[in-house]
Picture 1: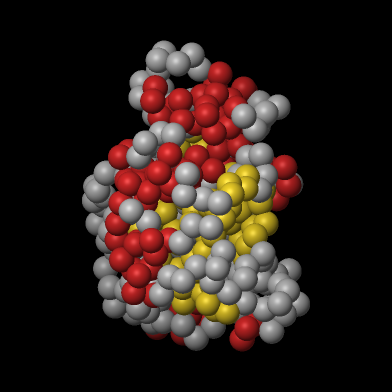
Picture 2: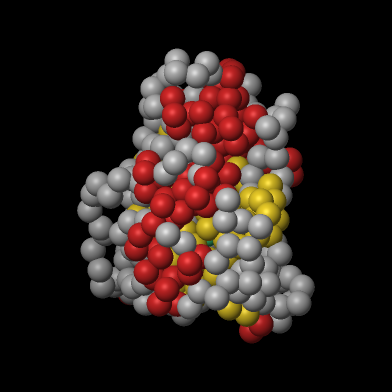
Length: 352
Ligand SMILES: [Fe+2]
């Protein structure tokens, strides 16, 4: 359903977070808008393009992120928008270069628990994800409880255990596409409340000092990607707590359905095994992800995560589901060039 939390302790009652909530703002135009829809500069530089599953995840082999031209960076944003997540191995990127690369895509975002303003250090976890109050292994879209939740996130692993600590990504575009027309219609009319309260309580009870108080925001349950114009679910069990248009028990049932829909989507999921120097670059607007904890020495896993602010999530009534975008006649829809790019990318993967 959603996070369980570890209770209103003395620490929770007395702690005062130092920073105010950020106000809503319009981020710079998404760099994917500037890309060649065929992405020739980027794709021609790869020794191999591995589509890891039909719906989500592409690995570009033989590309160094540190060497990308501005045109290739823009094309990478479009590829990430379409494929959800793009992977690289054996990168020579250092932290300063990662900051610089991230800045190309927008304004640096800051997670409420993030100490360094420019990146989060991601560590390993060896806890039991089935424990009451544990929130480490659940699917989420990174701090979706913000007014401007992050668009693109880059995670570069510095050290990794020989086995364990994989990350799972699931396509919310495909999760929406697989719904019945009746559920699509129902969900198009709903909003969802995203809350950081459980995360805040659990952080304090684990000894962290979040720099912002907990809060709630309401986003559409189905959002339109500003570049591809394709609709995705925007649900995650870590932060979504209810749907204001529904009555209490209706909300509870829908939360159960959505979690089940997400957790049973093996056909819409990619699981990435990290190696030192590997990078995942994903779009939080169209994927949910989870790190798999347990079974390894957590001190062996360390990564650096950078992210940029995205737009306030919106639903465009003219937006299309993935199947509709693939089937739409060329030139028949707004921004046909971008839709053509979506078609190029998915139709040759023979979607059912
Ligand atoms: Fe995350």
